Image (cartoon, rainbow, N blue to C red; front, side):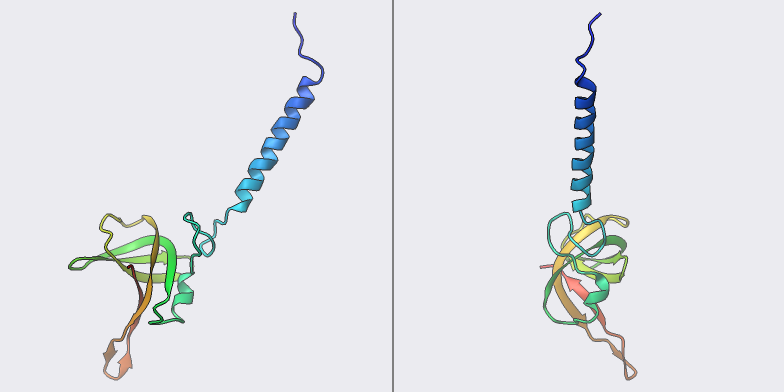
Amino acid sequence: MLQAPKFYLPFTVLHLGLTYFLMAGLISCGNFSVSGISAIGANVTPIRELRSQPDSNTTVYIQGQVEKIAPLLKKQAYLVKDGTGKIWAITNQTNLQVGDQVVIKGQIRYRSIPIAGKEYGEVYIEEK
């Protein structure tokens, strides 16, 4: 009967251990939190931070889940939520569904809505 060389078992264990540590290292390099690096490699801004920059025309990336859809004339509005809040995003994309995970690049906008002396304005993202 043929027997494997005596160094075969330690060599296999070494390869398995090395593979494990390399894979663990690669996985730990990813940032799976809501505010960090998205799959496209761009900085994603947490939605709660957008409230402090109304109408700044700053271009940002948001990442989250589509919660609601509101059809507009030539565009769609999607309510996107992440772990920090919710914001409406107006875009030309028409193929998104409730529950889809999205990354949207757009400019921060603010629409003033004064009613009976009170301000009910809303910050939103407009995709360009």
